[in-house]
Length: 140
Image (cartoon, rainbow, N blue to C red; front, side, top):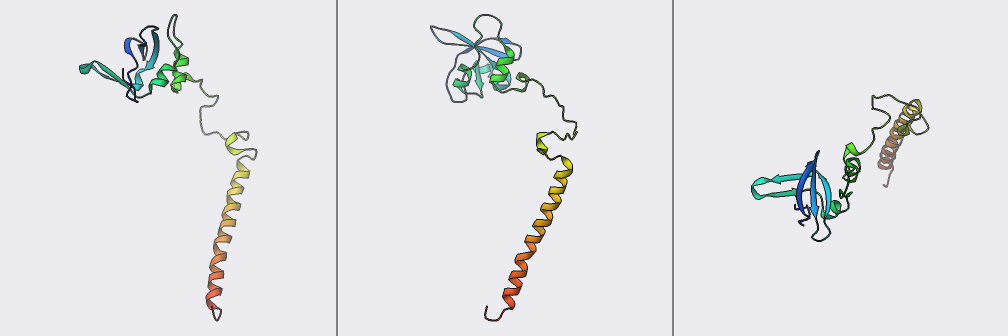
C-alpha cells in the first residue's frame, strides 16, 4: 500500500465491511483499517494507493486482537458515519434560540437588514454631493 506522501505503509491482508485491513511492521506487526473510499486498487500491478498519509494510517485505531471499533475508525478519518446524527434534520424551521440568529430572533434580523440598507444608501449619496459642491466652488 502506497500513501499520498509516496511512502509504503504495509500490505492489505483482508477486508472488513467497507474497510481494508492493512498490516505493517516487520517485528511488531500492527493492523489498521483504511476506509475503501480512500483507496484505489490497481490489480494489474498488485498495488493499492491511498489518498491519506502514512502518519494518518499509523495514528488510526489499531485492529490487533478483538473486534475493531469501526465507529472510531470512521471518526479518525473524518467520515460522516462516525458521528451521531444532529438533533435537527434541517427542514427550514426558524427557532428563536437558533445560534444562527444569535439572541435576536428573525424579526430583529429582518429589521437589522432594513436599517443597514438605509444607512448604506445614506452614506453612498453623501460623497456624491460633496464632489458636486467641490466642483462648483470657484478656484477648486
